[in-house]
Amino acid sequence: MSLKKPSRFMGSIEQIPALLYLVKWLVICGIVGALAGTASAWFLISLDWATELRENNFILVMFLPVGGLLIGLLYYYAGKGTEGGNDLILDELHRPARIIPLKMAPLVFFGSVATHLFGGSAGREGTAVQMGGAIADQFTRIFKLRPRDRATLIIAGVSAGFASIFGTPLAGAVFALEVVILGRMRYEAIYPAFLAALIGDQICHAWGVPHMIYEVTIIPDMTFAGIFWVIIAGIIFGLAGMFYSKLSNSIYEFFKAKVYYPPLRPFIGGVIIIAGVLALGSTRYLGLGLPVIIESFHDEVPVYDFLFKILFTAITLGAGFKGGEVTPLFFIGATLGNALVWFIPLPLALLAAMGFIAVFAGATNTPIACTLMGIELFGADAGIYIGLACVTAYFFSGHTGIYGSQIVGSPKHILFGKHKGRSLRDL
Image 1 (cartoon, helix red, strand yellow):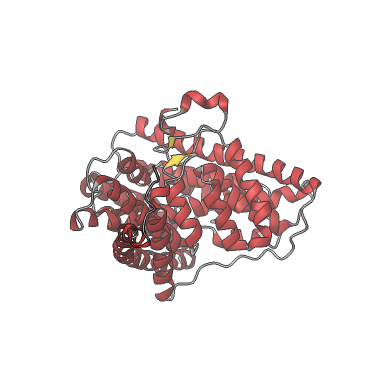
Image 2 (cartoon, one colour):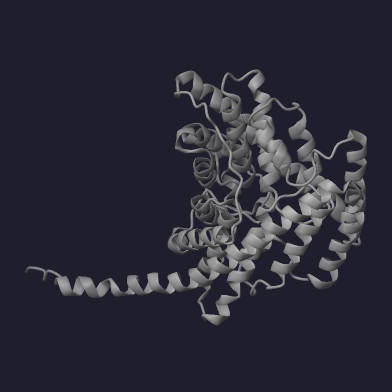
């Protein structure tokens, strides 16, 4: 008995659901990408204003404890349900409970700008991710989305936020797919993630907001010796990412256990940071630290730069100030890579670029997204060096990370098999 061959007409009919899916997410991601890209553009403009004002008026740094107290009071009395930050976004993807409060977006916007205005050592990715995720989730009700589609929507918001804040749409899309579960990718959301990332990035550019440009001019041909040295560097970068993650989490737990009134935590943290600034006689480790990052690509910087940035950032965010951790991780990695030039025979700028990306990869457990970010920022020629450094750092950072709500999907090593299905905060 012969089977009837499907007609060409039936094959065309079967493509209609796929076409409707594409159109549906084109509309949704167009809205989400436009809003997230706009939010990122305004945030970047506000950060530039806050940074310039602080650098021209050192007295503002002396008000860091007061700024921290105001941020703490704002979140304590008006921010109920938003305190989890990036981990709240991941928790909603793992265990959906309720729509992410829209107030998370303005709260983290204000809190992050205030942190930078008074000199806290923080970044910007966390703010963009939280704004993108919170804005996107509001459309769950509007479009009456099912739980699975809601997860895709949040991923699209995260993707648009990350892509637009750094000007890296490929990395932004893959980051949103990769960060949810350690060792796994959410392929069901791949089209919306890429679409939202591209739209968010274009909208941010349309607002006339520039992104930092980094240059790596000397990239030698890869050799067996080069592979060896990149692996050595990757191990060091991974250990640095693990150290930062553990220290930041420990400081957070310390403040949580010892300071019972939450608004006082950033106040005390601000006092400690001011003490550090006065002791060092320098504001080098405050804010984003972009001038130092740029310097590390061209000139030798103090070998201890990365250690002080780890300490200042861990205290800032562990005490309860707001902002991301990725740009400080860029600082940590670039200056650490710069320091490695003393014994690793690779060009200084290339080592800085490898560290810039690889410490981030180790601390976030997103080696594929970070490799793509390295290619977008430094060019394809540097990709082989950055990719190997990222996967090595990912492996050697262990089951640690800055996102405690990440769930271990595929353990990094067979010895870690018992960790499968558990969140990093429970390990």
